[in-house]
Image: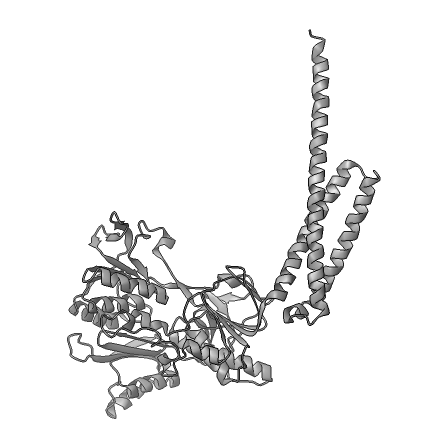
Length: 554
């Protein structure tokens, strides 16, 4: 039987060749059919784009007309090549292996052309606007108002926002929105009431011919092609873009904190966040609240929760609250004031885990010093991060933000950035700064619009000359700060937290000049005075002069 072994081996070898040939043939047929279908789709794209070029082409098509014509030439070129390859293959002028390889190559090339053609087809179907603001926060509303002041025509401007409501004054969310009585609600705090201006209701945008595109999140931004694409693949074209995307809250889940995804752990950034917190306040009436963070959100929400008669505990890792702005002495006043209101403060520690009940609702906060705090509600305010991801690799960045010049213009032509996302030249201090505050959002938006209009008209305007300004209100307290908190702080006034109406301040002295001033409980006149002082930067001796003249701020 040994003589059969070589025969079997040859039969198996021949069978393998036959099987391979059939598989080869089947793959070739599949690839040829694929190529034919792709060519049909390419023909359809060519016809569609050709018609649009013959008619009045859309603005973005006109801007990239040379590229489109080059694409059309490449389409014709590859169709001729494919036709030639088919003829050579049919006449057996090509080996089967060479023929298959060429077909595979052409499938790849046609695929690239189809992708490019899809882009040009999308461009022709886009909603086109002269101006687009991406982001629907405070900056967008103030920019819209300034556009109208500058002579905006109906249909020229669109605001694209992932929120479901027209721009509103965001600071309200951590203050009056949470009050148990007389709480602020929309439409009461739409922009621009925060600066004493007209309240811009949704109807105002309609009347002015501004398109509010709400509940729409932009997923892709091609600044070179001037195209924005939403998460639902809607596309928008622009001539000039203002980036006003703001910031997103930093979440404890970002750090992998155990149990940080439990129910009733809240962050506060958008009105939907505030609505969820209000519902929890009603459901957990007079319960226990833990505030994680000792900054703006922590202090303001902590006060609001105490006004709602919750048992409030604040936890933060720093040695005093608001360390980026407050001195130790300023912070001591507010910490003592909060303690007098019944708020417990735990400093120098962080939340490392959360426990939840059987319903998934938070019930306890574990600290890194092994203490455990009972909680019905947790509110986290540990900072924010500017939303610049859409523009990575397209714009210059610095200090965590999008770098702009004194007109809020980026390195990309016709693209501006305002508010939280921009790192801009702070003329007063000859420094590049990124500032997260509503006042800067308002004023940078207005500056960008003025710069856009001046550029269109060939005019020049003054560069953005911003004076840093921060403020807060909590309980019966109200403070303002102007300038820079660098140098030696000099405290003055009544800083007794038990006072009926405490009134005190701090001036920062650098190189013999007053560069920044903080004032708690000041009158409108006094607040204007400290703003002027921070802008002018008088010598430190000016405080003595004010004291002689009987001014409190000395």
